[in-house]
Image 1 (cartoon, rainbow, N blue to C red):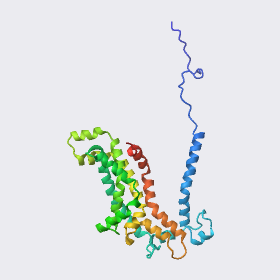
Image 2: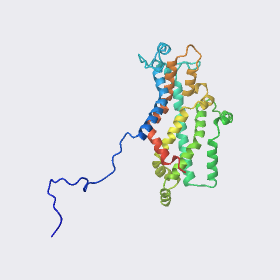
Image 3: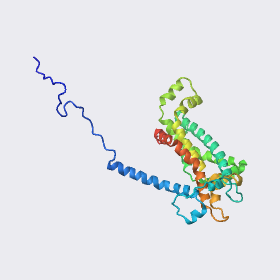
Image 4: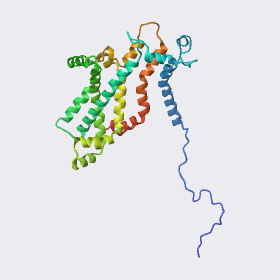
Length: 309
């Protein structure tokens, strides 16, 4: 005869009997999280505060800037300073605004970025998968060259571009940016390709694929994160450059950063701080947009292999 007691339906069971046990849910606001978010908010505001001042100042009139509070919001926002900074602000002897410098920067940035990234990607791919005699020495020299200050090479580069007949032109600036961008980009691509499974490369070699077919059909489709990293580094670095632009471009080919410097340091009349701030924001819009659009890809690319050996 079974000794098991039958519990009638609806009878409450003893507390805790046969109930699944798990971890208690952690409270969202813990002292550690409060401290972390406080620090993050503080530094975010610290770095965004200059941008706030620039934006608000660019939307004010000069009387409001002179007699008002620099931290106050504009009473009657106006984009007149933005239009003047773009089309009619004086950048030395001419008063055409930032527009010519913007298009010069575009003409410099696009080819320099494309050519340097493509060559660096091929270099990194070859250094990992198609080793040749002396490849490690070549790579070491390439990396060593990336740490040499630009100022040391200015005079030799001026002489070289003069002999090539391109000094004072956009071609000279494009060539310089392409050369100086390749070492660090080669390092990034080499480390990324080294982190990919070698079995893919070996399988493609067994199937008879050659150098370029493996590169375009296997390596490139898997390399979107590191390409985004390279794009961000090159676009922001080239767009924000001042030294090469002022030395190699020539007076009629100045990029946007040089034009901005000429607007801010113009000695004609009273300084127009609203125009200066508007010109600064306009000059920084391109790299800011690139960061905002592809920021998550930048982090993913770095984590996926940009710092791996």
